[in-house]
Image (cartoon, rainbow over all chains, first blue to last red; front, side, top):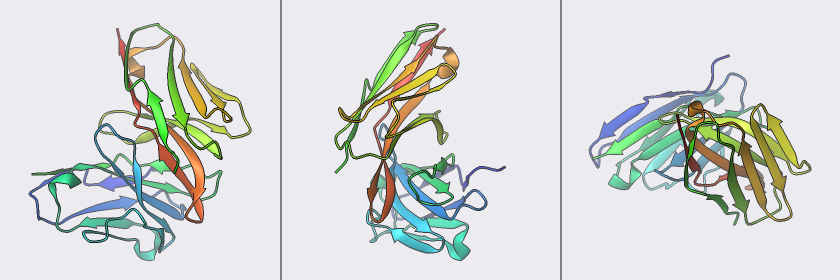
Length: 115
Length: 114
């Protein structure tokens, strides 16, 4: 069974440019998460989807970040415009549900460098 | 707000040595605690998950313990190998925003020297 797929794996852009990350969760997983991981830190949740609905986006900086999960499968996270401080690893994870016993499976992440 | 602390931040040991990684959390009202491994440039791989009602879990050379009342967990690695070199992250699951969420520590970077 394929794991969580993310692309691109690496992205280098100049500040003020837009950037988008794509995630394909494990087949059958209804819950999808986007995490931000700064260097030397643990992942922090940005947004959680239940099917197509964003049910927890309280940590998403909505002035420049947006996300969508069309048809409740793949998801895209966008930053526009990017700032120097956005340089980090963006991790996508999925789980069958968001229950207490549901395990999250993580993708390899997209490493973003903003110059 | 739940906070998770991992000590030490980095650890270097010779091959074959046994070692212990520490994790502490401020709010004992957790559902479970999970240890992850992260290799450079890769995502997180789950190693062990301990439910709040359990005291420990074992997988091969790894043993994780949980003392929920004191807010502490340890990950014991026996007979360390160079392939164990990675960053180890501890995460606790608590309730919030109508569901359950993971709060991570900053991790311990382990280097096993051949």
